[in-house]
Length: 386
Image (cartoon, rainbow, N blue to C red; front, side):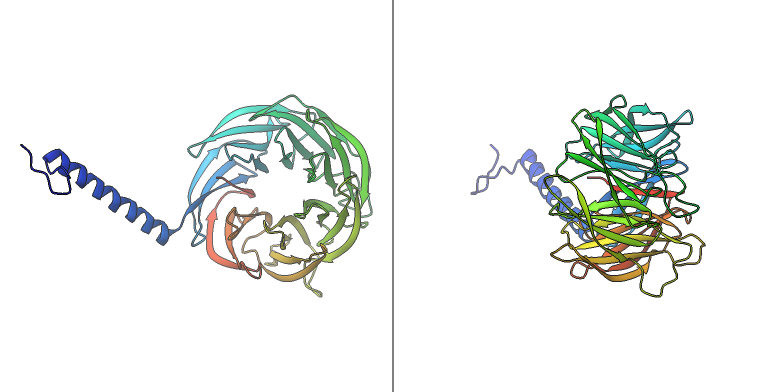
């Protein structure tokens, strides 16, 4: 008869084995927690390469280190991506047999597998985005001055729903001789889409339905020569912030929530007064999750070391104040993005072929370079996995 302790615990060989395994399991869990504390939680980063598809990195949430680079997908024209909310599908600009296209990939265990590819009549897209319900995929064709839309069902992209050709020009003798649609976004109410066009100095305005069909609703004028590129919306939906590539500035638009229409309120420089603007342009704009700060990326086209990041504060009335401008630590910061934790801003260096991480001060919003960087060829777009 096997002896039992007064507590009733079985001290047979099998019982002792269970106790040992349980103890080992607790030790392993404790060690894992300790490693997590020391080395930090890891977040997957997807980096679009203008030359070679999509790469993945792992961001250490404690230190900002960028490690474990993997070449996830090889392909042409994959300069810009967007993930769905679940983080299990990524949509990308693409080129198929030299033609403009969009593509989608399922994400499982860190690996990407192709779901769909759709072409359109154009040379290639520079930007893609999803509507809030993830039923419509939008794209902007810079070279052709076009905006396109496709229906989406899960991760599958349907046949082209709309192709809208922009027509117009503005005052810049080299960059604004014709239309250049640079990006397109669904508005906060998910009824209208907004497409900044650098060549026309306008933000084109479209209504759209659940099938992805666009209806032209006109446009909103920007300052002549400003070159609107990308835009984001404030958390309350009553303001839109348009990044002007050519004049290194952000225009604040009041947004009517009922009609979706925009009215310009103010424009603010992203560089300090007296800073040299020649051969400098802006590339990307982001709004912090709490809606208190805006970040912009500013590019030095001459490799003169002036590539920078600017932090602006957002007041209760939506107006902006420039807080600080710091080095981007890359050459040509083509894209920036904020980690889901809100602790980090990552920068894609197109010409220096790398990604850098910058810690965000949670009180002031200001940036501190982590000292960490990862090599990625022609780094052009950053997204974060779940």
